[in-house]
Length: 212
Ligand SMILES: [Zn+2]
Ligand SMILES: [Zn+2]
Picture 1 (spheres, rainbow, N blue to C red):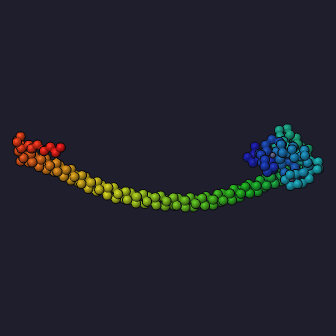
Picture 2 (picture 1 turned 180 degrees about the horizontal axis):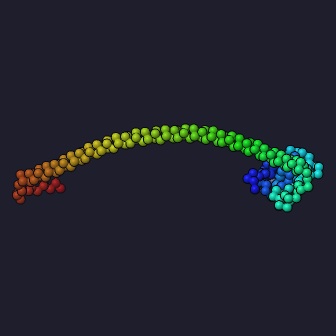
């Protein structure tokens, strides 16, 4: 069996034909489904609009004929007729192959155009992405700078606070020291006062005159 196969000429179908096919005198071929659907409706080729009214303009063909068919179908015909039939059959095949080549070339071109468009779109997206990354990097850079400035400010405030705490501790210590000094002085002076002044005798007490 050949590697190359006919395909249904219905653009939306293009199924590989390897069992039965509907062949037309305008050199088109259709799968069993599309052939029966189209030609039961109208005798007109959907590919080239050729009117197919004549006898044998449309033929349903078995693409894998058995051995007895192959042995008998051309038997009895003169060699030039056999050659003529074969030539027409090969011409049909060549036309189909040429059409297939055109379709494949068109598909390839279409795919290449699509690929080119995808490449262009990818480049555009890449540029947009790079732009976006650059903007985001600048934002991050700016945020890091702000954070560093804030960190330094906080450090300065902390240092000032520490200095103020240190001064406060000094003042508190001084206060404590002065308080202790004051207490000590007061105690001393009280003691001195108590020792320098003797206890009064009972004669020293004077009763206050009664003013009533
Ligand atoms: Zn089909
Ligand atoms: Zn046709």
